Image 1 (cartoon, rainbow, N blue to C red):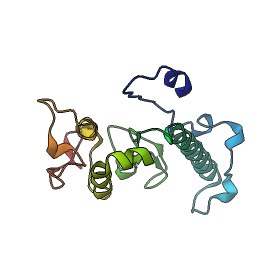
Image 2: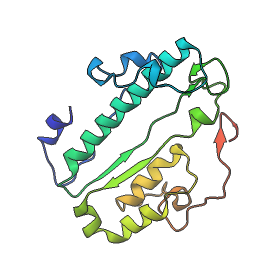
Image 3: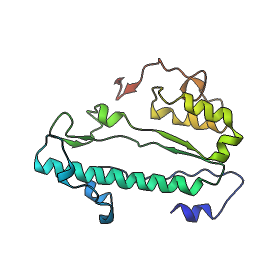
Image 4: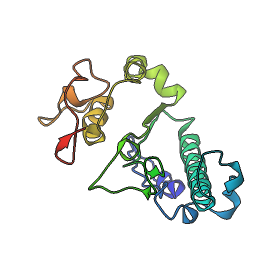
Length: 186
């Protein structure tokens, strides 16, 4: 996968990797060798069938974490940043008898996703101020639609479309602005 792309190194590289992640049909999102969790590991109040799905989801996330960790390892000895950001989350019997995601009726489990910005030791040494900005952003509210502004800021590219108020690492980031979802306030 990424090994082939990394064979053709340039002075600067930018990779986008789209993972399968934890979409529904969770049993198809991990190889059998990563079936670490079973229904017996689920302590939540749920039906047996729901516990099976919850275990499959846990296995899908476990495998996804393994893949992300492997990607980070590929860049450990380089001057690099790795940004991990799912496009959405899943609700797994959280408020109803439903597992998955529905864009027309989102809830916080579908909208609140983790974002990781990992930096290699070489990057941290060369860009200590950028690393401080990243660390300062850890608890700021963010909307993934604005990722382009953060990426541009991270790599010091300025365009007429760049908006510092939408870059989570920028001192001008507007943490108080309203976040929208499906045309409504989120």
